Amino acid sequence: MGVAFGDLIPREEVKIDYFSGKTIAIDAYNTIYQFLSIIRQRDGTPLMDFKGKITSHLSGLFYRSSQLLLQNIKPVYVFDGIPPEEKRKTIEKRIEIKQKAQMSWQEALSTGDLEAARKYAQATSKLTKEMVEESKQLLNAMGIPFIDAKQEGEAQAAHMCSKGEVFVCASQDWDSLLFGSPRLVRYLSVGGKKKLPMKNIFVETTPQLILLEKALSELGINREKLVWMAIMIGTDYNEGIKGIGPKKSLKIVKDAKSLSECFEIAKSTVENAENIEKIFLSPEVRDDYFLEWLPPNPDEVKKILCDNHDFDPERINSSLSKLCKQLNEKSAQSGLRNWF
Image (tube, rainbow, N blue to C red; front, side, top):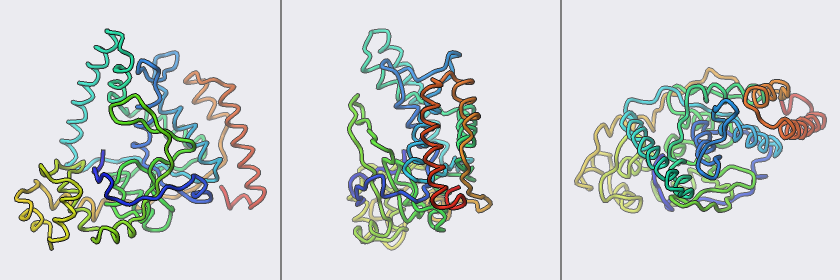
Protein backbone atom coordinates (compact mmCIF):
# COMPACT_ATOMS: atom_id res chain seq x y z
CA MET A 1 0.00 0.00 0.00
CA GLY A 2 2.75 2.42 0.94
CA VAL A 3 2.33 5.98 2.13
CA ALA A 4 -0.61 8.14 0.97
CA PHE A 5 1.19 11.36 0.00
CA GLY A 6 -1.66 12.35 -2.28
CA ASP A 7 -0.85 15.18 -4.69
CA LEU A 8 1.82 16.70 -2.47
CA ILE A 9 4.76 15.09 -4.27
CA PRO A 10 5.55 16.78 -7.63
CA ARG A 11 5.74 14.48 -10.64
CA GLU A 12 6.34 14.77 -14.36
CA GLU A 13 4.59 12.79 -17.08
CA VAL A 14 7.06 11.25 -19.53
CA LYS A 15 6.77 8.99 -22.55
CA ILE A 16 7.91 5.40 -22.27
CA ASP A 17 10.79 6.04 -24.68
CA TYR A 18 12.30 8.37 -22.07
CA PHE A 19 13.60 5.19 -20.42
CA SER A 20 15.02 3.69 -23.62
CA GLY A 21 18.57 2.45 -23.06
CA LYS A 22 18.14 2.61 -19.29
CA THR A 23 18.00 -0.02 -16.54
CA ILE A 24 14.96 -0.11 -14.26
CA ALA A 25 14.63 -1.88 -10.89
CA ILE A 26 11.05 -3.09 -10.62
CA ASP A 27 9.31 -3.81 -7.31
CA ALA A 28 8.37 -7.41 -8.17
CA TYR A 29 5.69 -8.03 -5.54
CA ASN A 30 3.99 -4.71 -6.21
CA THR A 31 3.94 -5.38 -9.95
CA ILE A 32 2.82 -9.01 -9.76
CA TYR A 33 0.01 -8.10 -7.37
CA GLN A 34 -1.22 -5.64 -10.01
CA PHE A 35 -1.33 -8.45 -12.57
CA LEU A 36 -3.19 -10.74 -10.17
CA SER A 37 -5.68 -7.99 -9.40
CA ILE A 38 -6.36 -6.66 -12.88
CA ILE A 39 -5.94 -9.61 -15.26
CA ARG A 40 -9.29 -11.27 -14.61
CA GLN A 41 -12.41 -12.37 -16.40
CA ARG A 42 -15.64 -10.39 -16.34
CA ASP A 43 -16.89 -12.05 -13.14
CA GLY A 44 -13.57 -11.49 -11.36
CA THR A 45 -12.16 -14.97 -11.87
CA PRO A 46 -8.40 -14.83 -12.54
CA LEU A 47 -6.85 -16.41 -15.62
CA MET A 48 -6.33 -20.13 -15.09
CA ASP A 49 -4.91 -23.09 -16.97
CA PHE A 50 -6.82 -26.30 -17.62
CA LYS A 51 -5.73 -27.64 -14.23
CA GLY A 52 -7.26 -24.67 -12.43
CA LYS A 53 -3.95 -23.00 -11.54
CA ILE A 54 -3.90 -19.19 -11.67
CA THR A 55 -1.80 -17.78 -14.51
CA SER A 56 -2.58 -14.03 -14.37
CA HIS A 57 0.86 -13.31 -12.89
CA LEU A 58 2.67 -15.17 -15.68
CA SER A 59 0.63 -13.49 -18.40
CA GLY A 60 1.31 -10.02 -17.01
CA LEU A 61 4.98 -10.70 -16.37
CA PHE A 62 5.64 -12.11 -19.83
CA TYR A 63 3.85 -9.45 -21.86
CA ARG A 64 4.92 -6.47 -19.71
CA SER A 65 8.57 -7.56 -19.67
CA SER A 66 8.51 -8.21 -23.42
CA GLN A 67 7.12 -4.72 -24.03
CA LEU A 68 9.87 -3.15 -21.94
CA LEU A 69 12.60 -5.11 -23.74
CA LEU A 70 11.12 -4.06 -27.10
CA GLN A 71 11.42 -0.45 -25.90
CA ASN A 72 15.15 -1.05 -25.30
CA ILE A 73 14.58 -0.96 -21.53
CA LYS A 74 16.47 -3.36 -19.26
CA PRO A 75 14.29 -4.50 -16.33
CA VAL A 76 15.58 -6.16 -13.17
CA TYR A 77 12.95 -7.45 -10.75
CA VAL A 78 13.52 -7.15 -7.01
CA PHE A 79 11.58 -9.55 -4.77
CA ASP A 80 10.81 -8.97 -1.10
CA GLY A 81 12.74 -10.90 1.51
CA ILE A 82 11.70 -11.43 5.14
CA PRO A 83 9.54 -8.45 6.18
CA PRO A 84 10.47 -6.43 9.28
CA GLU A 85 8.57 -7.41 12.42
CA GLU A 86 6.96 -3.97 12.39
CA LYS A 87 5.04 -5.00 9.26
CA ARG A 88 3.31 -7.97 10.93
CA LYS A 89 0.13 -6.09 11.89
CA THR A 90 -0.25 -4.71 8.37
CA ILE A 91 0.15 -8.19 6.88
CA GLU A 92 -2.45 -9.60 9.27
CA LYS A 93 -4.85 -6.78 8.39
CA ARG A 94 -4.39 -7.43 4.66
CA ILE A 95 -5.20 -11.12 5.17
CA GLU A 96 -8.38 -10.14 7.00
CA ILE A 97 -9.37 -7.73 4.21
CA LYS A 98 -8.84 -10.47 1.59
CA GLN A 99 -11.00 -12.90 3.56
CA LYS A 100 -13.85 -10.39 3.76
CA ALA A 101 -13.47 -9.58 0.06
CA GLN A 102 -13.64 -13.29 -0.75
CA MET A 103 -17.01 -13.55 1.01
CA SER A 104 -18.32 -10.43 -0.72
CA TRP A 105 -17.16 -11.77 -4.10
CA GLN A 106 -19.08 -15.01 -3.61
CA GLU A 107 -22.19 -13.11 -2.51
CA ALA A 108 -22.03 -10.88 -5.58
CA LEU A 109 -21.64 -13.91 -7.84
CA SER A 110 -24.67 -15.56 -6.24
CA THR A 111 -26.82 -12.52 -7.06
CA GLY A 112 -25.42 -12.13 -10.57
CA ASP A 113 -23.89 -8.71 -9.87
CA LEU A 114 -20.81 -9.10 -12.06
CA GLU A 115 -19.60 -5.51 -11.63
CA ALA A 116 -19.52 -5.88 -7.84
CA ALA A 117 -18.07 -9.38 -8.20
CA ARG A 118 -15.10 -8.11 -10.20
CA LYS A 119 -14.51 -5.26 -7.74
CA TYR A 120 -14.42 -7.58 -4.72
CA ALA A 121 -12.43 -10.23 -6.59
CA GLN A 122 -9.58 -7.80 -7.21
CA ALA A 123 -9.17 -7.37 -3.45
CA THR A 124 -8.76 -11.14 -2.95
CA SER A 125 -5.46 -11.41 -4.83
CA LYS A 126 -2.89 -13.64 -3.11
CA LEU A 127 0.71 -14.10 -4.13
CA THR A 128 1.79 -17.61 -3.14
CA LYS A 129 5.28 -19.08 -2.87
CA GLU A 130 4.51 -21.20 -5.93
CA MET A 131 3.59 -18.08 -7.93
CA VAL A 132 6.82 -16.37 -6.87
CA GLU A 133 8.87 -19.39 -7.93
CA GLU A 134 7.03 -19.62 -11.27
CA SER A 135 7.67 -15.91 -11.86
CA LYS A 136 11.39 -16.36 -11.22
CA GLN A 137 11.54 -19.35 -13.56
CA LEU A 138 9.90 -17.31 -16.31
CA LEU A 139 12.29 -14.39 -15.78
CA ASN A 140 15.23 -16.80 -16.01
CA ALA A 141 13.89 -18.18 -19.27
CA MET A 142 13.48 -14.65 -20.63
CA GLY A 143 17.08 -13.76 -19.68
CA ILE A 144 15.94 -11.10 -17.19
CA PRO A 145 17.80 -10.85 -13.86
CA PHE A 146 16.09 -10.76 -10.48
CA ILE A 147 17.28 -10.19 -6.93
CA ASP A 148 15.95 -11.47 -3.61
CA ALA A 149 16.10 -8.62 -1.12
CA LYS A 150 17.05 -9.09 2.52
CA GLN A 151 13.84 -7.39 3.61
CA GLU A 152 11.89 -4.89 1.51
CA GLY A 153 12.24 -5.05 -2.26
CA GLU A 154 11.77 -1.29 -2.57
CA ALA A 155 14.64 -0.69 -0.16
CA GLN A 156 16.92 -2.91 -2.21
CA ALA A 157 15.85 -1.25 -5.46
CA ALA A 158 16.42 2.20 -3.96
CA HIS A 159 19.89 1.11 -2.81
CA MET A 160 20.75 -0.02 -6.35
CA CYS A 161 19.48 3.27 -7.78
CA SER A 162 21.46 5.29 -5.24
CA LYS A 163 24.61 3.43 -6.30
CA GLY A 164 23.91 4.19 -9.96
CA GLU A 165 23.53 0.51 -10.90
CA VAL A 166 20.01 1.18 -12.16
CA PHE A 167 18.58 4.43 -13.46
CA VAL A 168 15.21 4.41 -11.71
CA CYS A 169 12.95 2.40 -9.40
CA ALA A 170 9.52 1.34 -10.65
CA SER A 171 6.64 0.95 -8.18
CA GLN A 172 3.15 2.27 -7.58
CA ASP A 173 4.07 3.07 -3.97
CA TRP A 174 5.99 6.12 -2.81
CA ASP A 175 8.18 4.17 -0.39
CA SER A 176 11.15 4.10 -2.79
CA LEU A 177 11.61 7.81 -2.07
CA LEU A 178 11.59 7.19 1.67
CA PHE A 179 14.27 4.53 1.15
CA GLY A 180 16.36 7.12 -0.69
CA SER A 181 15.90 6.34 -4.37
CA PRO A 182 16.93 9.41 -6.44
CA ARG A 183 14.26 8.56 -9.03
CA LEU A 184 10.92 6.77 -9.01
CA VAL A 185 8.60 5.94 -11.91
CA ARG A 186 4.93 5.09 -11.40
CA TYR A 187 2.59 3.60 -14.03
CA LEU A 188 5.47 2.09 -15.97
CA SER A 189 3.83 0.39 -18.94
CA VAL A 190 3.44 0.66 -22.68
CA GLY A 191 -0.06 1.95 -23.42
CA GLY A 192 -1.09 1.28 -19.85
CA LYS A 193 -4.32 1.74 -17.97
CA LYS A 194 -5.17 2.04 -14.30
CA LYS A 195 -8.37 1.19 -12.48
CA LEU A 196 -10.07 3.92 -10.49
CA PRO A 197 -10.45 2.99 -6.80
CA MET A 198 -13.73 1.18 -5.97
CA LYS A 199 -14.95 1.60 -9.57
CA ASN A 200 -14.92 -0.72 -12.55
CA ILE A 201 -13.51 2.10 -14.67
CA PHE A 202 -10.10 2.13 -16.36
CA VAL A 203 -8.31 5.27 -17.55
CA GLU A 204 -5.25 5.72 -19.74
CA THR A 205 -2.00 6.23 -17.85
CA THR A 206 1.33 7.79 -18.71
CA PRO A 207 4.52 7.02 -16.79
CA GLN A 208 5.10 9.49 -13.96
CA LEU A 209 8.69 10.38 -13.08
CA ILE A 210 9.41 11.63 -9.56
CA LEU A 211 12.81 13.10 -8.68
CA LEU A 212 13.61 12.92 -4.98
CA GLU A 213 15.77 16.03 -4.81
CA LYS A 214 13.26 18.09 -6.76
CA ALA A 215 10.44 16.89 -4.52
CA LEU A 216 12.36 17.69 -1.34
CA SER A 217 13.35 21.10 -2.70
CA GLU A 218 9.76 22.03 -3.57
CA LEU A 219 8.50 20.80 -0.20
CA GLY A 220 11.31 22.65 1.58
CA ILE A 221 12.44 19.64 3.65
CA ASN A 222 15.06 16.89 3.65
CA ARG A 223 14.59 13.14 3.31
CA GLU A 224 14.60 12.62 7.07
CA LYS A 225 11.63 14.95 7.44
CA LEU A 226 9.89 13.20 4.54
CA VAL A 227 10.15 10.02 6.60
CA TRP A 228 8.70 11.85 9.63
CA MET A 229 5.78 12.92 7.47
CA ALA A 230 5.21 9.34 6.36
CA ILE A 231 5.22 8.04 9.93
CA MET A 232 2.58 10.56 10.94
CA ILE A 233 0.44 9.87 7.86
CA GLY A 234 0.79 6.11 8.20
CA THR A 235 3.06 3.49 6.58
CA ASP A 236 3.14 -0.26 6.09
CA TYR A 237 4.66 -0.41 9.58
CA ASN A 238 2.25 1.77 11.52
CA GLU A 239 -1.12 3.44 11.55
CA GLY A 240 -1.03 7.18 11.12
CA ILE A 241 -2.05 9.81 13.62
CA LYS A 242 -5.76 10.53 13.36
CA GLY A 243 -6.49 13.85 11.67
CA ILE A 244 -3.03 14.25 10.16
CA GLY A 245 -2.67 14.04 6.38
CA PRO A 246 0.01 15.15 3.91
CA LYS A 247 -0.47 18.93 4.26
CA LYS A 248 -0.69 18.97 8.04
CA SER A 249 2.28 16.63 8.43
CA LEU A 250 4.35 18.88 6.15
CA LYS A 251 3.61 21.90 8.31
CA ILE A 252 4.54 19.96 11.44
CA VAL A 253 7.90 18.68 10.16
CA LYS A 254 8.88 22.15 9.00
CA ASP A 255 8.40 23.41 12.55
CA ALA A 256 10.05 20.40 14.24
CA LYS A 257 13.71 19.58 14.79
CA SER A 258 13.19 15.91 15.69
CA LEU A 259 10.66 13.13 15.35
CA SER A 260 9.78 13.37 19.01
CA GLU A 261 9.11 17.10 18.57
CA CYS A 262 6.74 16.22 15.71
CA PHE A 263 4.73 14.14 18.15
CA GLU A 264 4.71 16.96 20.68
CA ILE A 265 3.26 19.33 18.07
CA ALA A 266 0.75 16.70 16.93
CA LYS A 267 -0.18 15.94 20.56
CA SER A 268 0.02 12.25 19.77
CA THR A 269 2.60 9.56 19.13
CA VAL A 270 3.33 6.42 17.11
CA GLU A 271 4.47 3.14 18.63
CA ASN A 272 8.02 2.04 17.65
CA ALA A 273 8.48 5.28 15.71
CA GLU A 274 12.27 5.25 16.07
CA ASN A 275 12.47 1.70 14.70
CA ILE A 276 10.28 2.66 11.75
CA GLU A 277 12.45 5.70 11.06
CA LYS A 278 15.51 3.43 11.03
CA ILE A 279 13.84 0.99 8.58
CA PHE A 280 13.53 3.82 6.05
CA LEU A 281 16.79 5.67 6.69
CA SER A 282 19.06 2.63 7.24
CA PRO A 283 17.33 -0.32 5.58
CA GLU A 284 18.67 -3.86 5.38
CA VAL A 285 20.08 -4.30 1.86
CA ARG A 286 22.54 -6.53 0.06
CA ASP A 287 25.42 -5.98 -2.35
CA ASP A 288 26.18 -9.60 -3.24
CA TYR A 289 24.36 -9.67 -6.55
CA PHE A 290 25.29 -9.61 -10.23
CA LEU A 291 23.16 -8.09 -12.97
CA GLU A 292 23.29 -9.83 -16.31
CA TRP A 293 20.80 -9.82 -19.19
CA LEU A 294 20.90 -12.91 -21.41
CA PRO A 295 19.21 -13.83 -24.70
CA PRO A 296 15.73 -15.30 -24.15
CA ASN A 297 15.41 -19.07 -24.28
CA PRO A 298 12.27 -19.53 -26.44
CA ASP A 299 12.00 -23.27 -25.81
CA GLU A 300 12.10 -22.79 -22.05
CA VAL A 301 9.60 -19.91 -22.17
CA LYS A 302 7.19 -22.03 -24.24
CA LYS A 303 7.65 -24.98 -21.88
CA ILE A 304 6.68 -22.83 -18.88
CA LEU A 305 3.79 -20.99 -20.52
CA CYS A 306 2.41 -23.34 -23.17
CA ASP A 307 3.30 -26.84 -21.97
CA ASN A 308 2.85 -26.25 -18.24
CA HIS A 309 0.07 -23.64 -18.25
CA ASP A 310 -1.82 -23.94 -21.55
CA PHE A 311 -0.99 -20.51 -23.00
CA ASP A 312 -1.80 -20.09 -26.68
CA PRO A 313 1.35 -21.27 -28.54
CA GLU A 314 0.62 -19.02 -31.53
CA ARG A 315 0.50 -15.87 -29.40
CA ILE A 316 3.59 -16.79 -27.40
CA ASN A 317 5.53 -17.71 -30.56
CA SER A 318 4.55 -14.40 -32.14
CA SER A 319 5.72 -12.38 -29.13
CA LEU A 320 8.96 -14.36 -28.81
CA SER A 321 9.76 -14.03 -32.52
CA LYS A 322 9.29 -10.27 -32.41
CA LEU A 323 11.36 -9.98 -29.22
CA CYS A 324 14.24 -12.20 -30.39
CA LYS A 325 14.38 -10.47 -33.77
CA GLN A 326 14.66 -7.00 -32.23
CA LEU A 327 17.21 -8.04 -29.61
CA ASN A 328 19.34 -9.73 -32.27
CA GLU A 329 19.20 -6.59 -34.42
CA LYS A 330 20.23 -4.41 -31.48
CA SER A 331 23.10 -6.71 -30.54
CA ALA A 332 24.29 -6.74 -34.16
CA GLN A 333 24.21 -2.94 -34.31
CA SER A 334 25.89 -2.17 -30.99
CA GLY A 335 27.83 -5.32 -30.21
CA LEU A 336 26.54 -8.28 -28.25
CA ARG A 337 28.07 -7.27 -24.94
CA ASN A 338 26.49 -3.81 -25.04
CA TRP A 339 23.02 -5.31 -24.72
CA PHE A 340 23.27 -8.73 -23.08
